[in-house]
Image (cartoon, rainbow, N blue to C red; front, side):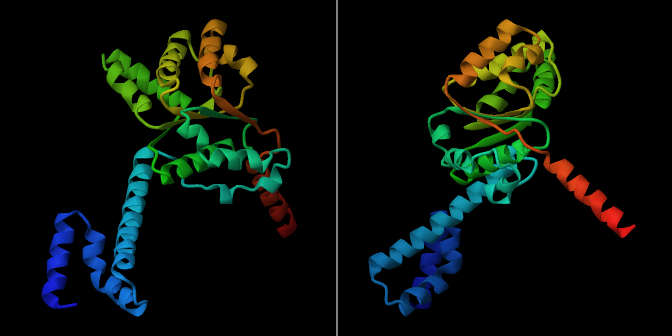
Length: 256
């Protein structure tokens, strides 16, 4: 490839917003030459590489905007420690068919069983697939919505929780809500109904949500919309945090 042609291609690629092509042109040409690629094969290679770079850039941007507390995947989850949890249920969720259907997923169980880990892993998978994500604890969401309501910016703040394809609401039930606070949650659930997915974690059974939201009627209204299209996974097993703590105590005892 002549220097003139190479320079012209780089300039055109930069104008088209294809920086990876501009930077890797010589490498692509060498690979094509070594593999004796035809013109269409070479074009397919260049476009596939550029798409992969764009997808990775979009993924990193979505993760940055998602407010996820960490970047854990399903491969990091120790299913052997939760023998009552069927891995197939989680793997089915990881296909993201529920996200495509704008349905919901609820992960229920006592503290420490890995609910947040699984919720984050599903969110990361959705992010990788190109869906927008936003992560929040229920308490943080309510606190921000209350502050916005007081400042007269509730409609604007609601968009934070309505805009993403997937809203992850962590720790539902750890603190009881007042009725006015529960009504703010209802607005989010109601406005997202059949328009976007919710992944939530809770240490309470659904029958206890009346206590969580301080009003049985309001809790029923929330559950009615949330559970209409929802995959529910219950995790009833030992705590990972307690496991790690017990292991540390055993090591300290043996060292003593």
